[in-house]
Image (tube, rainbow, N blue to C red):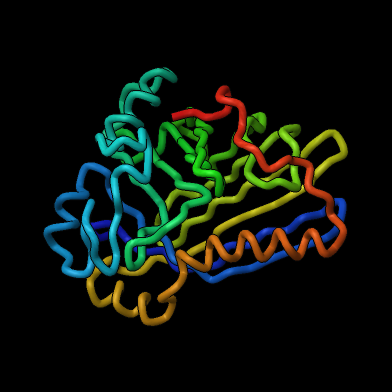
Amino acid sequence: MSALGAIYVGDVVHKRARPKRHSLRYRVFSMLVDLDQLESIDEKLRLFSLDRFNLVSLVTRDFGPRDGTSIAAFIRRRAAAAGVLDVTRIRMLAYPRLFGFAFNPITVYYCEDAEGVVRFMAYEVSNTFGEHHFYQAGVLPEQGEIQHEARKAFYVSPFNTLEGRYRFSVRPPAETVFLGITLSDDEGGLLTAYFKGERRLLSDFGLLKLLLAYPFMTAKVVLGIYWEALLLWLKGVPPTLKLRRQPKRHRQV
């Protein structure tokens, strides 16, 4: 894999089982970057910039502490607080800004030891109210496909309550990448979402090809959220969340 990182192109799929069946599939691409090499990526690519406008960019304040300070240091502190001290490399999978705009429903952090083995996972989940929350878990060195659970603690969709548990299934980035999330409650499975992508070279030529193929991808992510919400409402699925800001205890930065 290139020292610069990689691009993963694939499909985001959502499938809702209750109270009405509903599904969606969108073609997207994500960037995988080493958080300690962001400045180097900025220097080597013309179409990509860090913390300034370009056709493709990453802005530090969009992630982690959301204050422009080091994302890598922030994630290492979270790992250390969870008892994982041997984090040598952190790779982040996220949508970049295209033409200055992006919205990341979920950003994934793979924290690896000196042998390249994932030892800690963090997931930064965002909603369209501008709020975000972290789910995280330590990973056993001998674990194959990474699987773990977390109690739901953050509103993402107005059509779901805070009840239930997430089950994360992860295959770390290689020639392909896979992230699957299942939400279940006392009645069983409610919602399944996953992203499966194939690796492409992170280069100016690769970014240009993707910009020509998906020029409005990041705007489409937000428009798609509202469009799918409208479709659910038209199917008779009632919102369970009033349109208000969440209690501060759920806003984790």
